[in-house]
Amino acid sequence: MPDMATPAPATRPANPRFSSGPCAKIPGFSLELLADAPLGRSHRAAIGKAKLKEAIDLTRDILGVPADYRIGIVPASDTGAVEMALWSLLGARKTTMLAWESFGAGWVTDVVKQLKLDAEVKTADYGDIVDFKTVDFDTDVVFTWNGTTSGVRVANGDDIPAERAGLTICDATSAAYAMDLPWDKLDVVTFSWQKVLGGEGGHGVLILSPRAVERLESYKPAWPLPKIFRMTKNGKLNEGIFVGETINTPSMLCVEDYLVALKWAQKIGGLKALIARAEGNAKVVADFVAAKPWISNLANNPANASVTSVCLKFTDARIKDGAAFAKAVAKRLDKEGVALDAGAYRDAPPGLRIWCGSTVEKADVEALMPWIEYAFEAEIAAQAELA
Ligand SMILES: Cc1ncc(COP(=O)(O)O)c(C=O)c1O
Image 1: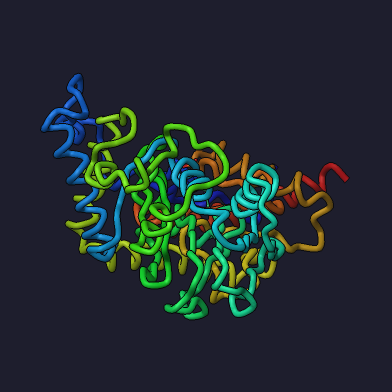
Image 2: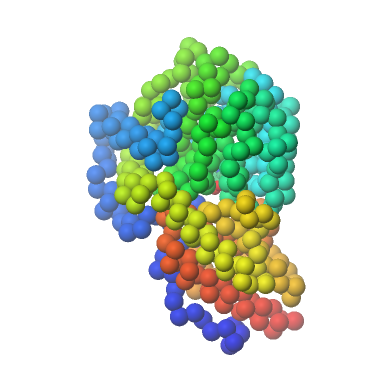
């Protein structure tokens, strides 16, 4: 039973969706907004191609992607976009892999165990980040901008030299649209629609700098490439991919959904407004955590604390089984209908993960905070009863 000293808060978040992917849809979303999707038509018909091109153009516009960078819509969500890059670009020079949580670690496995490259691997524990000052950017460097499962992000691109011989390949799926990405420091950027803009899974976005394109056109990997990874034909870039002629069939319903989200983003003030929303949401959590002695941010350095996937850990000495306790708190939040999918990622340290990305309303984050305290106190009381 909950401790009677901590009554249930009076207000519930209007939208309890705090999942780190797929993330909350845009405010006011309804399926009717997708009525303009050209369903039952070929994606290669003029209308389909125009929609795909518009998605690429708006992506460039809102993210501020330089005019000479290519933007492609590719298969298999962010994972597909990252794999395309790794399998197509790596092997030409030495590779450095950076990882500080589970998704980064997954890319290490791919490169070392599947591609069998003799890469330098630099890792940091959950809560910390690799020191970019120690990285040789004359090698190809693969990293995740925001570690979705640890809530630790790259603070900025200052330690990446603008002049570098290697390529920087950045999985920015939980960063794009909520954090500033320094395009001059990034050669490959990937993300999926299901994160900060609350879009759908299944489609990836792959952004390539001119240097990345140069690599594609001058280097042929020693391993075979499946059709869905192939970006060149006879040694030349397949430019069609980067104007909306996708390699295989996309979902025009998902494209429409992405367009609706992009137009919402534009309407509220573009990237600046999107970033401000995420930062405002994350600050609500940070302020709450700072005022409570029993919970803290998993990110050890506030400069690297994510403003999207905010990861929290319980630090109360009374907690006997950390994993069971955190799970019980998350379950209680779910049961109360105040935070769905807010448990830590399965491979991450036990705790909570509150998605604070740009589609989440600040009032909902504010309404959730007292519920976290309520659920925490309730589980402390439940644990005492069991003892
Ligand atoms: C950092 C990171 N990389 C990759 C992925 C995989 O994304 P997708 O399922 O869209 O391929 C995720 C999903 O949460 C992620 O957070």
